[in-house]
Structure formats: C-alpha cells, structure tokens
Length: 36
Image (tube, rainbow, N blue to C red; front, side, top):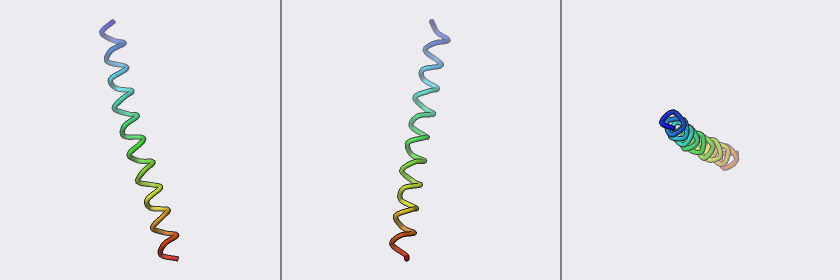
C-alpha cells in the first residue's frame, strides 16, 4: 500500500511539472508570434 501511495505522489509531482512546462511552451509560442 505504501509503495502505491509513493507512486501516486510522484505521478502528481511529475504531472504538475509537465503542466508547468506546457504553459511555458505555449507562452513562448505566443511571444514568438507577437514578435513577428
């Protein structure tokens, strides 16, 4: 049971990092379009 909990916690952390990365990429794309 404990191992499953740790896996879920790691998955949530990875997911939040992933979402942050996606938002960052989207903002970079918007900036590029704005510059052009």
